Length: 253
Image 1 (cartoon, rainbow, N blue to C red):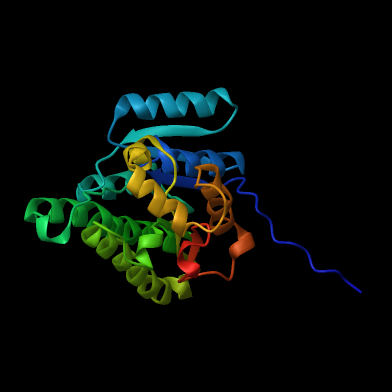
Image 2 (tube, one colour; image 1 turned 90 degrees about the horizontal axis):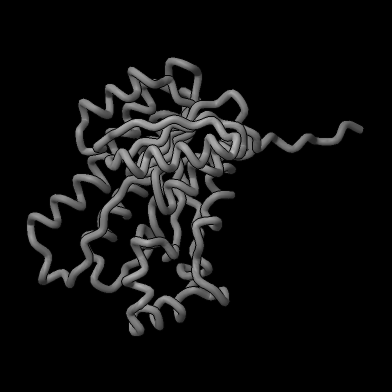
């Protein structure tokens, strides 16, 4: 009898582009991919944060470089794939939130959030697919949110963007599947990062979060890292058009 062999979680020889990768969840994704053996290109808007992240990864013996990129600049996005590609993995963690009651949403805030969370994500995936098709496949990972599956208070626009990502991913997975390009998302619950400190510091919002998360703790960046490696690697070779909910049971009911 020949025993089945577990597909590898290793990413040796792979190249990964991580947008929004200089801090928070994006940095966690970058570290996870690099630890699994990938060469990681960290793309973000802030050069000092990029340089600091790359320095820390290189100092830890990991392979990384950085590039300044505004994901809403579609010409710049295309240039990154042309100049620094090809990439086997795209992990898009660039995103924005402007929370308010729906009746208080301004057109300016709506456009800003939609432009980054939906339009930029769409065309990042498009350019990744063009590049990956030439080399026989790849993995596109969108960092979405549990709010792509449920609603949330003061989050009508944000929820709309994340629901959009889930739909876009399904359609792209169907279109790109024949080229061995997989398209999936990771949907975290509230993760403790500098960007969420204000939310966690609000007693009413903290009580809401604690009530919704079924596990006895809040989410941390490390909780996202395993899912990232899984979706990037051969271990998830038959997984496409779906999402991994890292939500502590929030959407379970």
